Image (cartoon, rainbow, N blue to C red; front, side, top):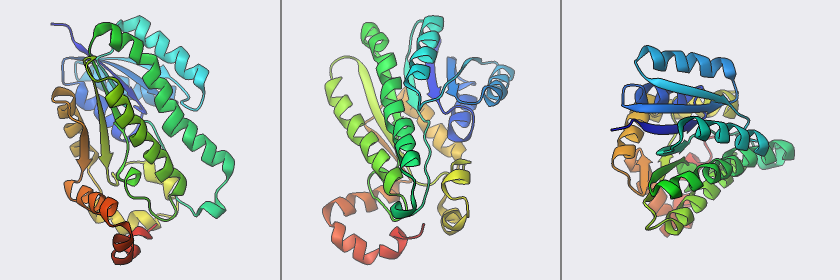
Length: 259
């Protein structure tokens, strides 16, 4: 049997890096995408030391031409795409009235349009194969918006909407589509999102371990399902919010304003 080919965006640090390391122990060929050539080389080195195989592709997910070029090169090199994990993304936590529109637009270009373009790049190959799995790393923020994350939450709402629609469109093609909705993960994401550390200090005790999240995503590639919500109890709150948003905002307003 041939090795499974897995594409991972945002693979140079945080969850993406951990995913690359964990998949290096599996029978896989990895195609890793991120902005930093140097960091990608470091991850590639670890993968190879673990006995795995990795190809690296520097890419700017805010630049459509960069995405098209790097994904075309990767698909040409490996020939098949079994799994695409759209992991890349970033946030900036601040009141909308203090935000810069250029930054807001870039967040959408990376978190939403970059994800869509990466997906569009692999779909023809997956459709021709009659198989594949697209995993979009969304967020619990895509289900419950909170103060000081208007743009980030909006991008994750968009990712969830896109994921759910795409799943229906691809029904019967052999291509699975999954959303992963984690709460806060202990990664360098917060170095940019929460530069003052105020939010991080408040949620430190409930932050997810990237190794645990990665392990569950590895299992998701083996047994696809519609959604993976982490932690499970946070999704209960998200479900309740859909039913009674006014009541939840009244009862848990302080938690929604922790940022």
